[in-house]
Length: 393
Ligand code: NDP
Image (cartoon, rainbow, N blue to C red; front, side, top):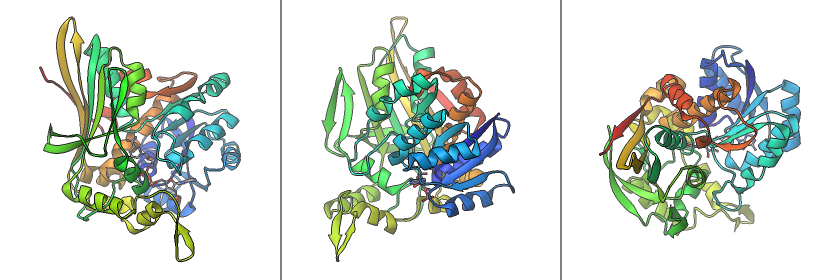
């Protein structure tokens, strides 16, 4: 039905590509494009002969990308490159009149800010062209937004509080490594924490707020309050919301390594001079750390990401937990990627599938919770991310 252009042949790009190939009825033609053709070739070699086409592209260059889209006749873009490319890729979609989807909000390479402002500002342009852009179709953001919309639709008249709970209990055997792009990951976790309460954002020091949460199928884990981008859109779209927080688990070893790297300046994103050369410490660190893609075959254990929502139904208090558990080894066996890439790549494919099938449609720039959650929840169960609901009262 549609020719999809997947941009970014990294960990998430691998999963999206494998999953699109598994959904050939929807994705009748698949092109994978990335900065280095070799990254695309590696993924193409894992798939049946001629299952996908590959292209080299620098997605920072809007005009080159628009040329590529026109030349190959792509009909939708799944952007799983880095958040730095979001705006240029959205612009290329506008130039060529095709819909857009991504999994992470735009970030400027020189400034670690997590906000939708610049992407939401393109709403008018997408509306004028009658095109749809779907933002944050990964797991968190992504499935967590859909879980909130599902809770709102089926369980509550008003949701008063949401906690998003992200646990990766996988073990890759290294003292320190990140499960997705190290630069993006470390920028996120070393930033100040923030949550929203009674109409205001409250800032915390990094990792200042900690709680012990008992994750089903995993057990109790220390979980730290972070800022996470889906909160910015959920406060606009969830009725009656008074508080929203995001927690992520970190092991002792991860935290002590990160603290030490931060203390010596290795998480810096500003250029420093080293023996006459300019380097960015965080980029250099990325070169030293294991490639997240290499963690796949060595990672064992489970992930559990979900939401706890509390509020009112028919005048009575209600509290529910919706969550999804994935097994790193099973993910690797299916698509040669560990669970973090898997749980991001599957929802990216599903978002595009629903757009192509017209089940999620609109004109403008949208976040996930703005659409009917039922069709997405159904696809999650079908496409390898079965979820569960627990009533907590
Ligand atoms: P990787 O670093 O593994 O992959 C990113 C890929 O993007 C690389 O393969 C790289 O290409 C490619 N790329 C980088 N710059 C360009 C460019 N200018 N033009 C074309 N291609 C480029 O990252 P991940 O796969 O781990 O993450 C991908 C995205 O998913 C990120 O935006 C990340 O923030 C997001 N994410 C979202 C999550 C969610 O739940 N919502 C969770 C995890 C990640 P090459 O190899 O060719 O050099």
